[in-house]
Image 1: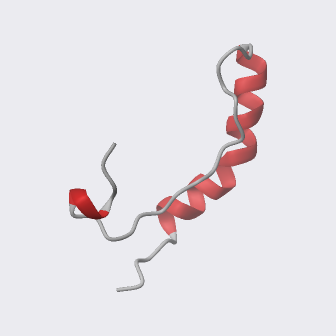
Image 2: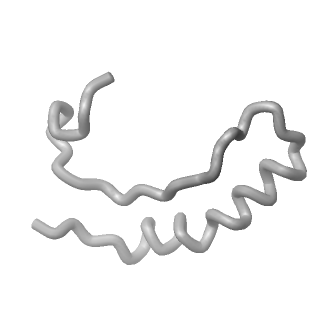
Length: 51
């Protein structure tokens, strides 16, 4: 597995989603997605690199 730097990316927005995902039913996965959505939206619309 290569690092972001090896791929020419110095920074990126990340959202951490609690694991495991596998083995959960659709309702549990949707709940995790719903909980993560505000952070995903913020990362997609507000995140700026420091450089």
